[in-house]
Length: 403
Ligand code: KG4
Image (tube, rainbow, N blue to C red; front, side, top):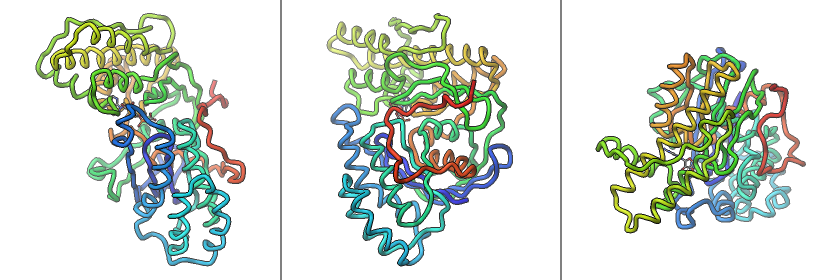
């Protein structure tokens, strides 16, 4: 089955084409036929975070070029079928004029590609940004007569982290390098630690594609805390990789810190998180140390990263034990952090459990994760009705049948 994946929930405009076969298990195989991603991070940097209307506009401008890159010649010559669907597009894309302007000529010059379904993120995320992807999928579905699978972004992260890839073949995700893989070895129940800019959750999965959120942050997400702390240190957005780089420098230079930050809720007997106190503690230290030296920044970055890691590791171990999960999956932008990965992998190994992660470049938002999750739903013919499909900014994971 060939699936076109579309992701626009935040500040990445991404489109991909995958081919997949087999059930959710050892027989599953997939190949990435085309993959294109344009990050808007630099544009949002001056706002210190993602500015929703700018994200919406940039998705509108970027989707057709990303689609063309992802399909890279896999379309045939134009057919009258596609051209007929084009007539209804102005209504579907009335709020995305830049997209309409590029999509109509694209559809007129290129025919329907050989695809079986379109998988699109419909939540959670920034609603104006999500709508662009959803309306793009609706427009393509109409023009090409292909069904839509509405994908929960968080499920995309989980499924992505459960796949394995041939190491040789993932050298450059942004180019159309052919990559392939299957699913890693795992056993249910699985615990997923989702750590991104908008979410920090522990999710239990007892059977394929069924989820129950068992722990969550009570305030900031882990990535949000990284970004806010980076901003306090005048580091660019997104701040996670910059904090991580400084922390790594402090570790390699053996910069021991006299600073001790809190480990919020670590010793409480629950599996929820809180990161806003940690951020406030950093703010207080910075405010009391003007001018802030580079050494202080490094030491503080290290202590902050280690505090976040301690909490994530502690809560994940507690949850894995509570639910008897021998396989833990982690996904979302913060799971690209190598120190956090190492700490999670080591602690879980000590506890007799194993950690599944994807390549760091697939831990942040991308379209492959949406196409992969979409494939499993397409296999079950769980299609959305394009006439009523809505972007759902606060979409939750699960509640269906996991407990
Ligand atoms: O999953 P993602 O790409 O987007 C959503 O939030 O949905 O995650 C982005 C977040 C940002 O907060 C970014 O600072 C953080 O992931 N991040 C990192 C690292 N790389 C990205 N945080 C810590 N260490 C990293 N290496």
